[in-house]
Image 1 (tube, rainbow, N blue to C red):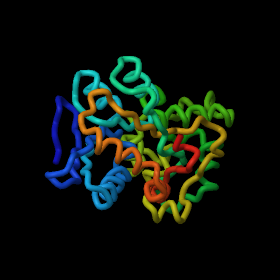
Image 2 (tube, helix red, strand yellow; image 1 turned 45 degrees about the horizontal axis):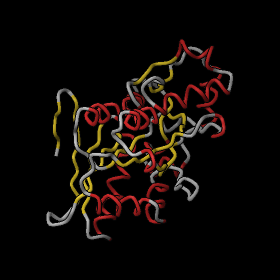
Image 3 (tube, rainbow, N blue to C red; image 1 turned 90 degrees about the horizontal axis):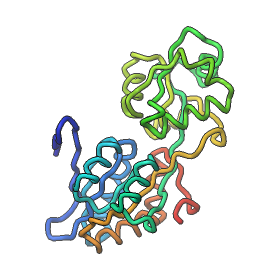
Length: 254
């Protein structure tokens, strides 16, 4: 069901039985698909229900700050998480990382090999490259940091086309309006990931893109909330996230 708040499009997904207590989760668009799968598994294996609202993290943050009622907030941008904590809208002690995103350089043209992608990045000065806005996207910030670490940032800036967020950046590349660019590995199909049709930078070259979940102080559905947080820590949830292209390990669940 799609709901329009102002100019923002939200996707509400209810995965529950009407008679059960429901946990309502505000989820940034960048990790919406695997969270839908997690909710389905949660609904099947517990007596509680799950409802997701997906939107850009900044939109969700603004609505929470203005009183929108959710139980949990899940985002890859720690700025918003910390903003909610500082505004006393969220419980700092409840903050946990459930997944790590990885950035890759990708083209929608399947004939372009990983080696060719790297060559275009480093040598083809006339070819533009898409990147999510580093000031608005944690994935964009990670891509910028990585390019700085490789010593490419200064010379490449004139070639960059900025997407509004990581989803918009993917759309620019997928429609071939931009020949290649940096996106999240999780945005690629399982088939593309299996064939490794992308170039992946060394992960130590940038700060991990952590997707964190935090409990909101306006939360009403405490039993369902606790059950879902526990569910996020189990091996089944980790497997779903890993299969979707995210890093997931016990070290994140602290």
